[in-house]
View 1 (cartoon, rainbow, N blue to C red):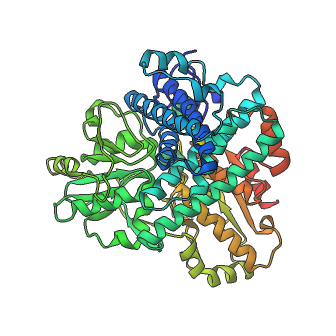
View 2: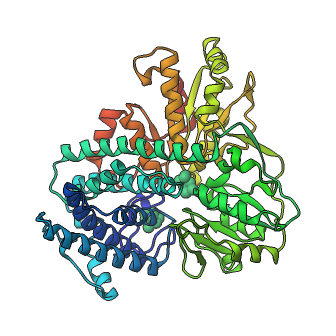
View 3: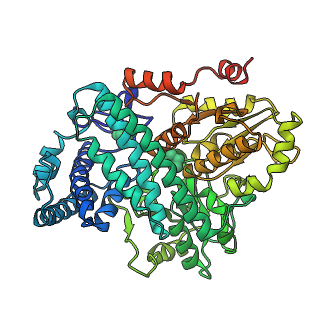
Length: 546
Ligand code: SF4
Ligand code: SF3
């Protein structure tokens, strides 16, 4: 075994990747990611303590959540990045440690606070001893990882919000608390309680990002998104970061280069502020896992702002650029913005001008933009449709897409749902059914896309609003079922957030996470009615109570 990673749905054999990741992550990168998490625990311990005398460092908060984000599945494959991040975190940890001593505050004796090296060979040695398997008890390991994985998702959302100038110290403090808690001898019950608290903070993180996005770019509105192409050369932008989207649109204005969204950037099309750009053409392609073919035919440069990168083939590797928490060795990384300035995308734009325009792979439009504000505007229509029986049930089918064949389940499930049901979606899971032509109910489309995975927050807000309108005591009394698909860690924080809001009986697929030990899975099953998926026909009967 040269590594151990089981944080995503595609982990090998639904157990763990032990030689190389199914995602393409090499063992040296996986191990350095483990070491980074270990070092971030130490940094969290000292920064958390420093809060007692308001000596805590804002930079440490940023280093912590950016570090967590960079370890998310498919975000960053660059070994050098992790070496740099480990060194930076160690340096900062020791500076804060010094200030703790000076100010008479106790310094934890945990190894993550005292271990130090600046030798990369030693990093590799140490990394082998601090990974997931360092916790021997299977249930404690499972809960610790569930919390860390949830916090990784939370960190991603916090980073996007910060890029738009929105931060919440409470959230940063919690991330530190959670990381430190995973170094302590907590009981199963205490860890279960912390898991739920992670969900509560997940709601806060998504709410913060929602405020950041909608305040900056307006509320998403119903939009027909073009999925065809135009004749200019284009740049494809992927991932979740709207600030990058804005700056790319600004810098491409008047250059003769068009901009297209890909994967989780599709919802950028729904924001009023982005609609004013004539050269913003629409969306190209589908969910992340089809990028090999779709990037080939796109012809132009591709900018990754976050996960999900598939290791690129040589024929288009030189057209791939990364920025923010994403990275891939050999691909140009666009540096972070300097205070008061934009990122510099000129290299991508210059390259685009020399390349051919995209080959059309689809034609027509898809409809989206059903985040909370837009749905509230339609509330009367929706409520009438429920009261008249025209809408019998809503299905929340949010989350991630992935490459496993078993995910055809979601397409089939959407196709076979009765015509009096509505799908509420968010995240790249939607690409399994958003081009199916499922029709509408009295003008309300049967697939309502709220946006990115973080916009699952909108779905929760919508559910809470419906509960209020129908004067129900419990969110679970709504005619609403949850059939969620997951792949990476952001979907885990969405799941924990829903649990913390009291949502029961969520079905999670295509497989239950490998990081849930049988006992921990049982806790979730018994207390929250969490279930996996089965055959489409059987599940439909179950969901529809037939
Ligand atoms: Fe395996 Fe997923 Fe970890 Fe990649 S992120 S190494 S596929 S478990
Ligand atoms: Fe998709 Fe990677 Fe999760 Fe944001 S882009 S939902 S998988």
